[in-house]
Image 1 (cartoon, helix red, strand yellow):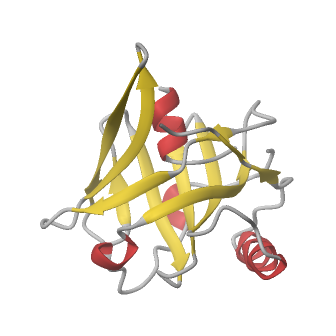
Image 2 (cartoon, rainbow, N blue to C red):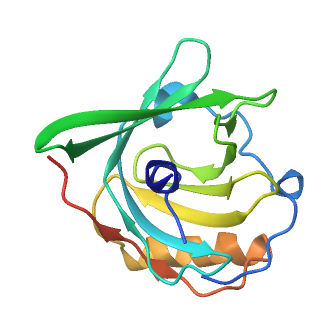
Length: 167
């Protein structure tokens, strides 16, 4: 479960509605989003007050799916863990087997993406997350994230993600 939470990056307190009300980025291209990412900021609902995540990689699949991949140490050995993000009817809208959903709201494909995530059946947790190709948050990226959050009605506190070491 920690892998999924990390894979979908996020955590605060906000009032997000049903995922169907959150727009998916038009003309989303899974090939262009496929690269290494750092979790940077999140606005969660629920009890979480801090978040820790591994840097991750999104790997494009030929059928439009994405694979979320992290490198972790298990039993003293370095390995990879993958979570498959299965494309729904609209590009940019994904579901996992856990069940969780991931909707890409906005990206420039080169420096950042903003995604809306639900985790657990019945949408146990919802998150708005910012990931970047660099491990630091620039003032411009934080402003962009706040602007998108406000446009979606997300008013909770922003949490800075704590990056975990990777092997």
